[in-house]
Image: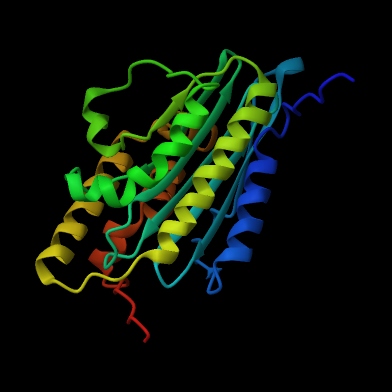
Length: 264
């Protein structure tokens, strides 16, 4: 029996459907996170003539008592472009890493990045948050080989279990990448479940500084900026990046973010 082929027109829809169902089942306090006006769904036509293609960007956002923002951007542009960018940002009173899944498919192949991106690089932090992931990382790196060099300035934002690979075919994404995605997500939720809030003022300050450094870097260097600008224009793009994708800095400036009280 021939293997079922991936649908190149909605390659990452099943990934998001799985993630949403898993979060609904395992986060008892999952709630909607507000998405600013104009960002829930955006459409644009690209190309000309027979190559004309509708590109849609659908945004999703949730939160829990431990996770400040869970957000996803799902871009569908036919066979030429499929993207799922899915990140979880913990509240500032937890030392949890970020969960990050950046799944990009272009005509030349796929760019896959899965990680639990660390706030710190101490031995103790790695023992707490990277060592539990190592078995999963080793399991999947066999079938998903290293994708090659990435910018030196980005390296502090990745963990020792950063799964970075560039498969050439859709079926590998549908099978091996999907299984890795499921395992990384499940393990991250385990870490969230076990997390306890930090109360030491010095540690809280370090967490805040580390989160803001990561968010500032990602907002400044967001690789999707060029793509979104081409489709939707610079004004919408900059507001989407700073007002939704990486919104903590703005919310703190506005005074609209506060660490939630920890309920006994």
